[in-house]
Amino acid sequence: MSTIRKSLALILSLVIVCLFAVGCSQSELKPSYSIAMEIGKIQDTENGINLDSYSNSWDNVLIDSSYDVKTAVENLKIDNADKVSVTGYDDTLVVAFIKDNSITDYAFIDDENKEVFDILFDYMYQNTGKIYPKGTLFEKN
Image (tube, rainbow, N blue to C red; front, side, top):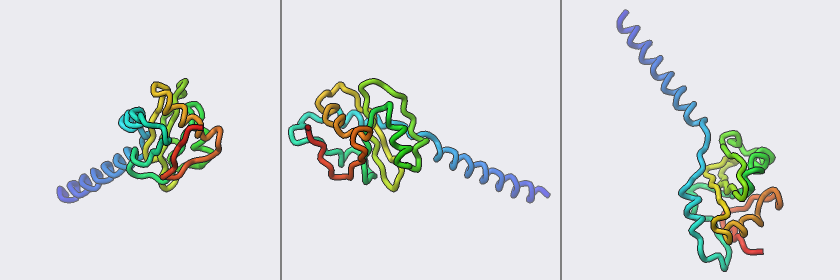
């Protein structure tokens, strides 16, 4: 009987660990402050801004205001749209990196670096209805 109890306890423990792991994988995505800091350091915008090196795994990028990004990811039917935690802040953009219809990373870009902010502002989804592929050069308008 002791062996059966140990086996059941082991199985129950494995089930709990698996459920915990699944629950953890379903948690909110957190904004990447390191990506935001790196984008904020861009000084030479004479030729535009290329975001290719700021996130490891992505095919497209969505840029929108912090107030409108939730609607954009819902309209685009992004698989993990509900995992993005964004509160609307004035003068703040969200740069969301997307791969296989899921957001892999996102960052908040505020207007501290006005030149970078102004360039990316012109590419907001709410104004363009577009997401942009890797390799896009975001140019001054």
